Image (cartoon, rainbow over all chains, first blue to last red; front, side, top):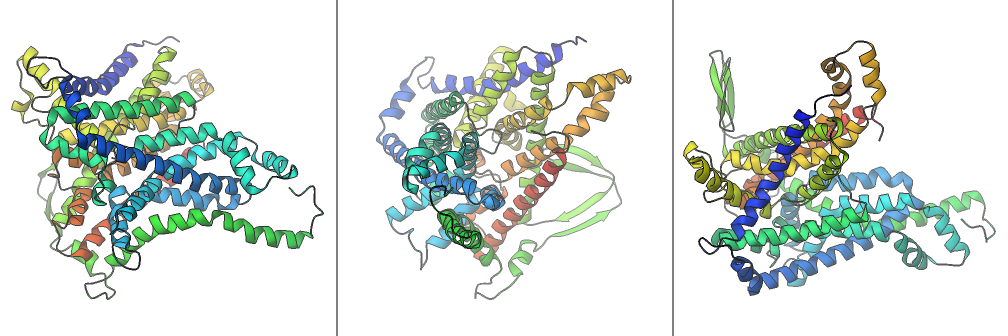
Length: 262
Length: 327
């Protein structure tokens, strides 16, 4: 039975309009710093500003730390649960769900409260604040990262690999670093890209931990420099898309879940 | 596992592997305890303490201070996000800033869960079951994957650049149709603008979740109902829709939570003008509102409770949808 495809086409057209018009609008707006002229001036202003370079570098480094910390925390855990403690799976799931139940604003509220007074007053030092920022980000990216690693582990025969390595005399360190990690390369990379996309422009946690990060800088710029901040939007969008594109190329997106920082 | 060694007695092996195995997950649970459970726990503790540190429920009671509700049997109108609906009764509702913040947050979240959910469902429906070429489906999924990450501050800027007073679309409409959007009372900084903006990060999630569910509708079910003489409408009404309804509702609940916890988008869009629950907490952390810290904790705990309820509902519906749609 052949049905008319007019209605579906109209729906898809409207959907794509909704998707693309804000992007085109933003791009157009960002090119109009000089009246009646298409110019890249706003981009030039942004990219050459020291504040941009500093905050972006800062957020970039924090994103790398987040990825490193998240990987080191989650991969061994997921591997171990897979191999030895499958009965812990629901509890791990519960923990990752906590990140959904506790939105970023609440999490940072609690973090400030816990870590700004004795005995754990590490918020007072710069290093301590950076550490808390990274931990907050790890918490935020936990579900995506865990799911990505878990999918990766399901795809390989963890038990056989482990037993093979053990019978060849490998210790746990060798098994993890030389056997499991390389086999999870793709899963870890895609987890890393999601994490990067989530963290690079994060606003809420960075604001309240008073970090010189990219997200707060962007929000700040928006109040005074509309064209530059729009150019910044395009730049950060491009970055996010590059990450997601890489992830989809790797073919293993942890999709269909709450993503990003609202 | 220990093929190259002589195996110890089973009982001894089990005892040993259990005691060591637990050590492997200690870092993870330590992390969860320090950076998830402790921070939320401390808010809960703060919420049930008064200023002297005594145990009290006064903070939660304080959230409802000045709130009263009564129904009178005379017709009136309800106002939801600027739209008016007739009501058969009059609600006499006195409220305070905290409860108002919750009400506004819940309204925005319900409306954007519905708008994003319906839009996402229609798009997925068109792409999966509309008889369109294959590339439409993969393009839709790709764009949705991307758009679900487009949120927060940049998204707010994108909508200001598009629908703001000097935005792309506003100017386009004014130049080509001689019609000023802002003369109609529209503003991207209003609630309608907020809903439009939120919907942008809401609908992709629905597309991504509901597409596999629509794939799971078996062709045989449709053929069977057609053989039994059902029209397309009857097939949807009695077969397809009841099957996907739980995952549709479940996803909308996720969208609700997604919007309820959002703060960066709203803050960047309106500069904190709208007193959403998250914005209230934002300002409370800055020390701008609610001079009482215990009250601030109570508001935060209230948000956790709302999120937890929505998640529980989600799980219940998820279980129901798995009955028919095994993924």
